[in-house]
Image (tube, rainbow, N blue to C red; front, side):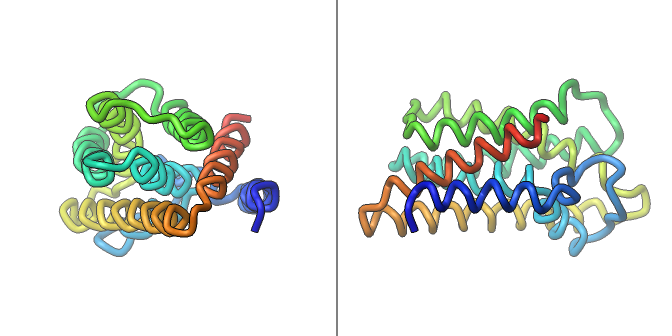
Length: 193
């Protein structure tokens, strides 16, 4: 599959799935482990950002391969803890859209940043994503189960991004990873509209 075909597939998927674009505050029922597990997978913005973290970590290689995704998952749990009781966090929706757009651009351009900077950046994005997950949790839900569910789903999406990135490196197809980044960035543009 060439670069332009992959980019078109991402754009078409984004246009055909607008109802899945926002898995955030006030968007449906959520309770317990299974709902926590389903929550990140129910939103195009979360899927794109979390796959992108795995792809970008793979592009940077070295310790980034594990440190960047682990930073995201850990800080996301903190964001969830802030969102559950409704502690205010500004620019949540804008930050989530920015995460999709910026991570896509970083992947498309194959930008490699120092570990401290890339971890700090994804940590900031994770705070917003986690806040959205936590704010979605109903009062009577098991907070621990719900949190473990969205953390596991996030880790699995990161792992999928890493697996794709490593697979493309193995067959010398870095351009496909860059095309995926471009598609993610276009989804960010779509979500911003």
